[in-house]
Amino acid sequence: MDIKTVGIVGAGQMGNGIAHVMSLAGYNVLLNDVSEETLKSAIDTIDRNLERQVSREKITADEKAAAMARIKTTGALPELGQSDLVIEAATERETVKQAIFEDLLPHLKSNTILTSNTSSISITRLASRTDRPEKFMGFHFMNPVPVMQLVELIRGIATDGETFDACKAVVDKLGKTAATAEDFPAFIVNRILMPMINEAVYTLYEGVGSVSSIDSSLKLGANHPMGPLELADFIGLDTCLAIMNVLHDGLADTKYRPCPLLTKYVEAGWLGRKTQRGFYDYR
Ligand code: CAA
Image 1 (cartoon, rainbow, N blue to C red):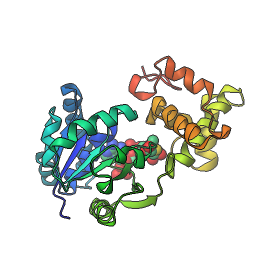
Image 2 (cartoon, rainbow, N blue to C red):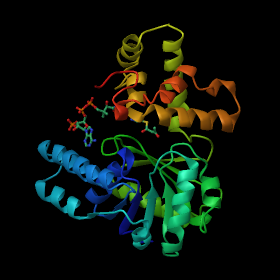
Image 3 (cartoon, protein in one colour):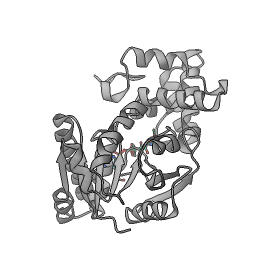
Image 4 (cartoon, rainbow, N blue to C red):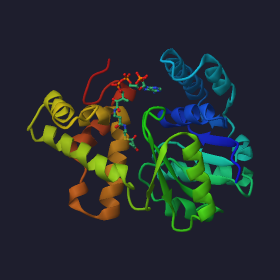
């Protein structure tokens, strides 16, 4: 299948990063969001991040201009009907994702591949509520998308080989590396990463270490580029909690119990960098 146009639903942190790398790789991008303001700020972010790549001589100014020209924003979901591949990158809430698929499906071409950038929700369950479970799969990018090399590809129980191969070819064209994961809660990266972050929050909660000593320990003692609490703020504490809940509910093991301190921060609206307050204060 020849993929030329990629529709992206959601222009937040992940959606704008996906639009950035897709357009730079030569795909036409239709970027959708319910908020005009989010779309505008996504374009500003993409422009800034592409400029950063120009200034570091990773790409030329012409390549940047061509990439920007390939991105079209729209507040109207039906316009994504022309896409060959759709990547849903909306909020990590199953009801939100389902509502998007319901609205989008009547407008899609019959052979459009539908994917979700979900970091933890069952692909098989999401697929089962669409008209094309064999053309549905998980397409999971890491944050920041332009920098991180990995894309997790997750087959639902019904995903066919042609769909998988087409998505794998897109990952190759992006110059990224695909890791294939089976469809179990949180797949591979978050199955391993989130319990580590959750354990770091327990370490803080139990007073074993301070925010800075926990983060320095992992940065300097285990060579992680960011400490786990800094990384949690970067990902978003609401997303971290949602993923822990998927692991806890889906695997029914107390080792995945979300730390009460993580829950409390989310209840306070302290969601990390995006709200300017999390384990660190960014105000
Ligand atoms: N767009 C384009 N380029 C970017 C960028 C962006 N958004 N953000 C950073 N860069 C580039 C910089 O320009 C810089 O490029 P050069 O190497 O050419 O100089 C390079 O990336 C490094 O950036 P900085 O020098 O600004 O900062 P840094 O060295 O501190 O690195 C970081 C920043 C890449 C974010 C690094 O701290 C890191 O790797 N952190 C861990 C990130 C991580 O673990 N992500 C996965 C999260 S889990 C996930 O995403 C899955 C999920 O479902 C929750």
